[in-house]
Amino acid sequence: MTVELVCGGCQCGRVRYSVRVDSFDAYLCHCRMCQRATGGVSIAFTNVKQADVSWSHEPDWFRSSPIAERPFCASCGTPLGFRYREGSDKMDLTVGSFDDPARFVPKSHFGTESLHDAWLDTRDLPRQRSDEYPALVERWTKAKRGG
Ligand SMILES: [Zn+2]
Ligand SMILES: [Zn+2]
Image 1 (cartoon, protein in one colour):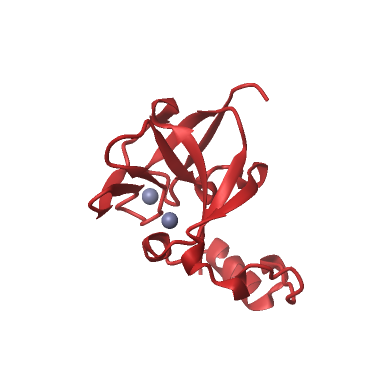
Image 2 (tube, rainbow, N blue to C red; image 1 turned 120 degrees about the horizontal axis):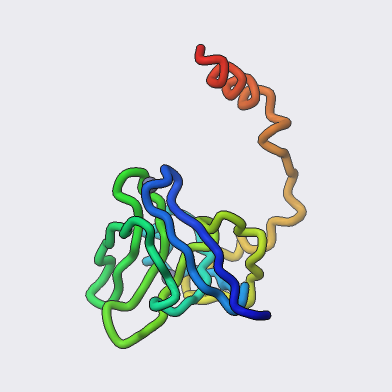
């Protein structure tokens, strides 16, 4: 593919970025550091050149270890990525923070020493859409009415 400009940001909208990508390849990191940093059983990342990322509002940075730091939004808490503190011109961005995460395709697993096998293939579990869950729909309806 050719180079494309794609955008993303945090949940509250304070931190926004655009990044030039030449691939929609992504991977899941299962390492304990990522599990702790995101609260998830794994985190989907795509690897980009730092120089290709443009922040419309600088993220906050958490030094998660002596070798790494992670951009996030201090207002809403959204984890936005990962980078080594030195020695690399690349960084990761969280797939879920992109405006259109569906474009990314998982290509590999990393940090598999702490991979939770039970969460890996969940395709046969029962499924329910959030807009078909009456209790949630009712809450949204009330919220939109302002009551
Ligand atoms: Zn935010
Ligand atoms: Zn990790």
